[in-house]
Length: 88
Image 1 (cartoon, rainbow, N blue to C red):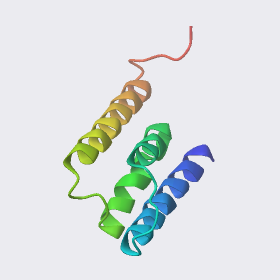
Image 2: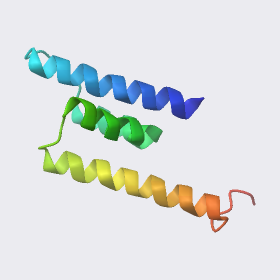
Image 3: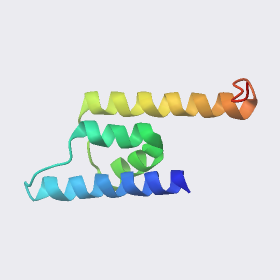
Image 4: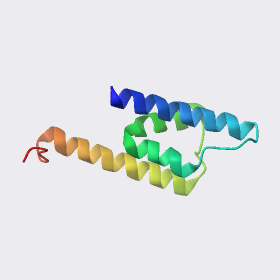
């Protein structure tokens, strides 16, 4: 449930920020968008970038987003393969 919620929220945040950018209104800080991705919303962030064509030219933002996604994928792989046990 958590992953569905955080990814939905992240996707909505990217859409809201893009709308605010077009209207030249106050925006969602990049740091907050990256935190949403880091909290598990990286798939929602990647889909949001693709759907809304948002933050695609910001090199530093892209580097951080892809780093977060890579770390999450590596962690998921290690847990799923049993190489990283969460039990003591």
